Image (tube, rainbow, N blue to C red):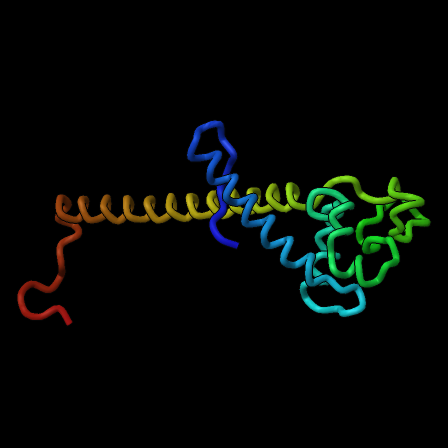
Length: 164
């Protein structure tokens, strides 16, 4: 997927990283959506259905994005995948003309970017915690070495010869 920006701050470089991240996600999602085929349960199809179901979203920007996919054009059934249906819509069949209100209104791109940013923040915090533990370990080792050189109780019992 490329690089990930951590936050979309107001500074120029932060905004550029977030913009680059969204472009990468948008490009990746569009590529997967173009290959979607509801009758073929491969990983890409499963991933789209899973993301739409878990994040309660539909399409890249909204449900109308499905109208530009090969699957929508080939099937000519004027519907979107069932994973676009709202949880509260019990009779949803994915049809666009009669009941688009049964579909999730939000697109998946912004929600995926937000999830990626949350995951990256967790990774960064974990790395910082690990670095702090390593630093604390080095500090303890330095304290022990400094005390050893000052305290005669830490002298070696064997004087002279090899230490093997």
